[in-house]
Image (cartoon, rainbow, N blue to C red; front, side, top):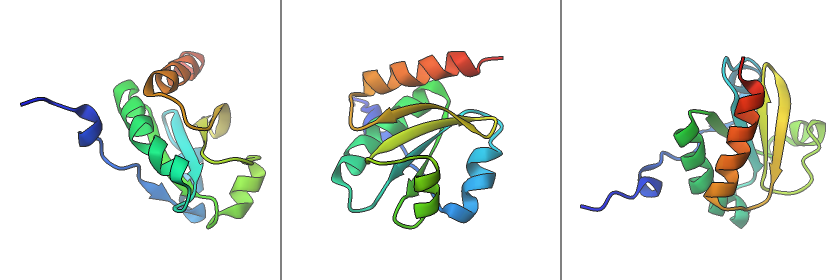
Amino acid sequence: MHHNPAQNTAPIPHINASDFDRAVLQSPTPIVVEFGAPWCAPCRAVAPALAAACAQTGVGVVSLNVDAAPALATHFEVRAMPTMIAFWHGAPIARFRGAASKQARLKWIERFQQEAAP
């Protein structure tokens, strides 16, 4: 039987504004937040590749609905969706905007992982 890892990738867990501090700012490891919205087709399209890239690199990932958390979207200057922001030690360390291939996402994650390495 042919194994397709993209089909077996768990969906990205959703957080809300009240979870943000605990899930993201207090995360003990680097974590990517996908700022998007349920009605955003490109956001849904990138989710499997983003989840797969994060799983492959061991980086956490969560999704935040900007409609439900407009203050956070404004605070982190999210002007287009999807916008992925990597956080480490409570601060944004890298940003990736728009749809792209899984390979481009992997390169982006590996680059900020090297910066976040002790």
